[in-house]
Every structure is written in structure tokens, then in C-alpha cells.
Image (cartoon, rainbow, N blue to C red; front, side, top):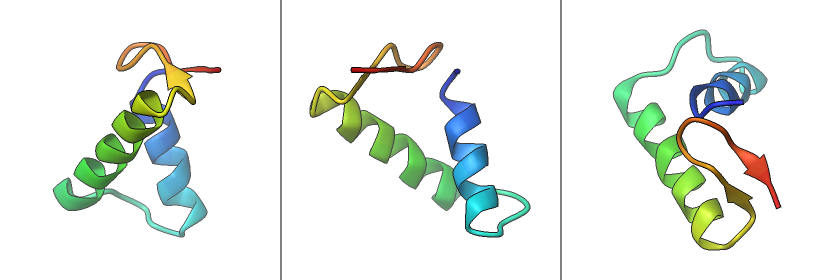
Length: 50
């Protein structure tokens, strides 16, 4: 999956139909943190769990 898919799914989980720039930015920051922690790899085109 690419970077946008998990953010869309997370927004749906919380009941949001769309993501504003603040929410999108927060999700992007979370994905970067997960990469820094070594939990995911391959941003932004293909996210792979480690």
C-alpha cells in the first residue's frame, strides 16, 4: 500500500469522511516516526511492515 491508503483507512476508523490538511500532516508525521523507529519501510510509494 502507498502512504495515502493507511491514512484514509485511519480516518474512516475514526468516522471522518475526509481529511483536512492538519489531519493529513499529522498522519504523515506519524508514518515518518514509525519509519524512524524501524517499524515500517518504503515511504511514500510502498509501506512495508518490518
